[in-house]
Image 1 (spheres, rainbow, N blue to C red):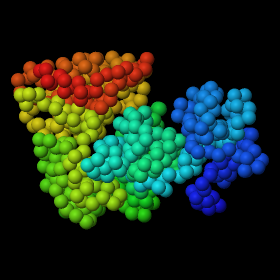
Image 2: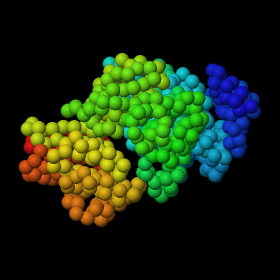
Image 3: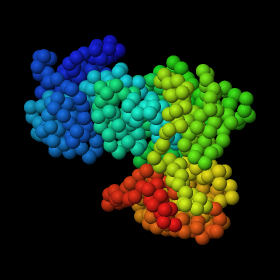
Image 4: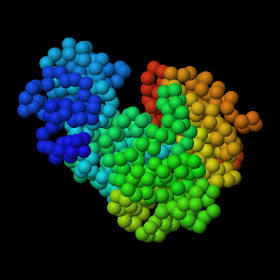
Length: 529
């Protein structure tokens, strides 16, 4: 019954509150209805769904959800033209006082119902859009930008919509993202816009988006699992690493093709590969080729790999090997991990129908804001590198790459740790950085509800004995100080500014405060040293 009903709904021109009630009842999620007309023909037509009253348009369903929900939000939605609402049982009495005549659908699980209702209300646009979903602890944004550049070719935003950490673009709306993966009503609105504009969708899929059902019901043409590390494990995110991993593995539940990293650690690789078998096809990528002695390869032959990897002043070059072609590729980012990201993008793009020429051109021309952004002073003796690395795994990858690329340079690393979440990061990052840096400067990075002084003190306490380090609380002052130390060293130097990347605000206890993005600040600073 469920599959038959969904197939019928996909082909319908008109979707109503009565139709939605039938769908939710079929899913076992409908507890009751309020003010729903007895005659289905009199049921209001629904043309979209929202959970934010500020974006409601006439004809939409408004979804009342969240611990901080207020009945006034429903009134605002009705003022904007909402024709029905969906809510949990405990909200019915309060909401009926606000909207005594408005049709309502009362659900046993609002989050699950929201995903189902949003897909249906927006007309199942997933059936008209190719979707690439990308998850992983690190690299999601870079891979998404690589794939978008490949799809777009020489004309930005011509073929690909984007949902991710940095920005949201769907062909109609374009803004800085609030969440890596939006809530279901917003997700399906963006998919609907992309479909109407003839765009494919490239999206980052967070563990939170998977765990809390934001992407339930979405089918991926390609689902990529890049890597997994110990991050986002805290009282307010994932209580355990197992919960984090299981959440990420959910990406394969509704995907046609799986793209996986064949080179990751033994236990996780086996589990990721096993979960990927739910897809009709599995494509693997690896830095190491089939004949390389890679201890992490598990004896498996990757479908896509790299050889002849060479750093250049502007990035990396390598030869890409795929089942259908072998050719040189260049990227404007440094580091082996970015070669790995490029291999993932090649695998995704091929499954979306892109050929070798289009892939190579897109990778060569791609720029990723705040990711391994390199700038040098006029003398060429001082280089600054800005990167979004904000956990131990990422810091180790970035600084080991920098140390390898600049072996005889004086290296100063500037970074902080977030407050109120990801508390393990402040203890992981200093020991991850210590083997590669000559000096560490700890500073502010979204302290949130915690005193930045305490976070930095804990980072000093986590720093290995014998490592040179200090605290400069103000981020701009910390960067200036690091540059001054580099100049005073009398050696060719590198200053790595990590954590904020492209971001233009600090999240503090009293709310977000504007800041100059690190890349922009560093460029201005190096022009004047």
